[in-house]
Length: 75
Image 1 (cartoon, rainbow, N blue to C red):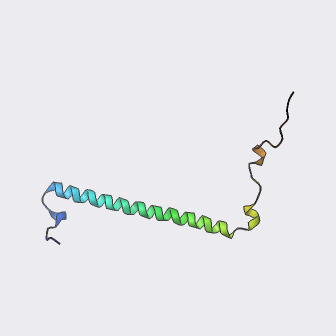
Image 2 (cartoon, helix red, strand yellow):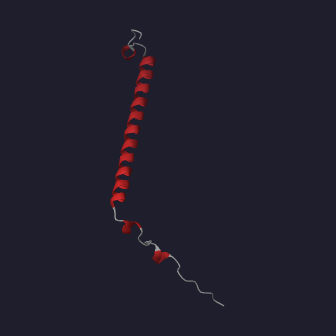
Image 3 (cartoon, rainbow, N blue to C red):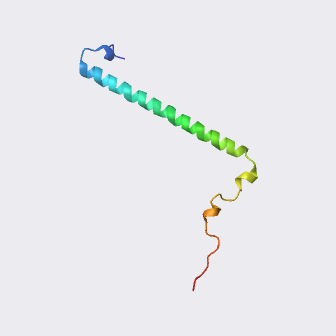
């Protein structure tokens, strides 16, 4: 590598560019941590769902009270 230390360079433009790059890398790292955390939560929910009894997975729809079961033709 070159012996130039860009963090302590006297040129303010170079320091600003290095700072901006560092901020973008940190933001990408934090986004990946958040994405992994979200994936772990979804994986935990799926795992709990797999542990449930089979009867609980085939329960009737809770929205059946809102569905029209029988229609009548009015003449």
